[in-house]
Image (cartoon, rainbow, N blue to C red; front, side, top):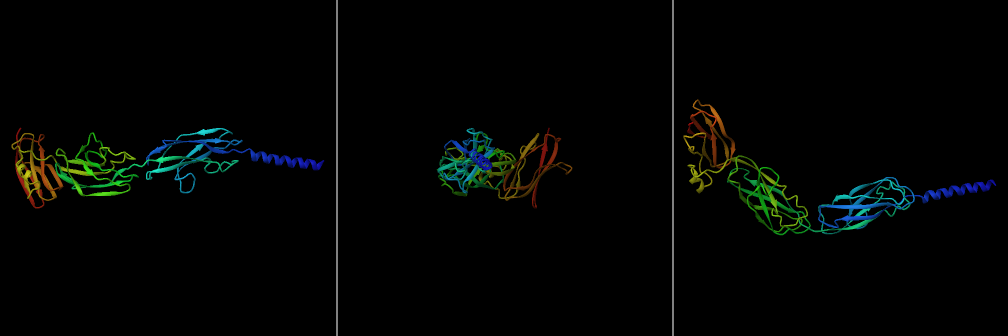
Length: 372
């Protein structure tokens, strides 16, 4: 009798162990949806896996890994796009979630795979540890992607209506060749490109750009800054495919290169300026000079031209009859050329004033008569 009891107790223990072994969860990826199934490199992809517990016991909370792969087998070369939190699941219960992921930028056209692995870190003890994977195909469509990697101007300190030489390096980091296209040069007051507000200084017809290649545009492209640009800081934004004729994998990275320009003299002279004929015949002066002011005598404001044959430090001031400087119109490094300046004397009393310009050892003085 005692022996029978021992046998029965042992049998009960064995049966309990077997039951515990059989009563285990089993997490699988029962469904996997991809949208869109065809897309460009660097674009967003919505991945919707359904995780189901097909076991006969509750599963604890777990994680599912979502991977980008070149084949249907998960290995160390695959890139994890996102990790999905999966709540505890009763037997036969499921959990579904949309995951928006950005696929890699530098991809060749072709077929790839999204692989989802349930219980990715093996924290849940399952009845079957080998059925956690599911894969779905994704097609990467080949498109070019044009970007500017560098841009420079010469000179970048200049006067209105002056010519500047623009060099740039254009890169196609897409997976297919970019056909011939235009590059636009936009004059802007800030670094944000607005084709409706910024002034295009003229398109340049650029050649086709093979995938994965770049080229520096030299000799440089010559452009003229706006004639109505007032002294101050401006930005010249260099935009490849500015007319949007090419379908690119990323249409939002074309305007991330600009050149900073400082306009250091205002608008070009009017025909009534004494130096106007010489400036039209020869855009660069042969010697230092200071024109007579026009009008003179004047009421409120007058204008004059300061000619500088080479870039150098310069200073232009207004003095009263006591010899005191009452206004500094210009001070600092100045580009070569003709610089038209205006003195607004609305707040000063009527009387005799002196206009003085200096550069190095050279100086010149002109008389001004303010009448009111």
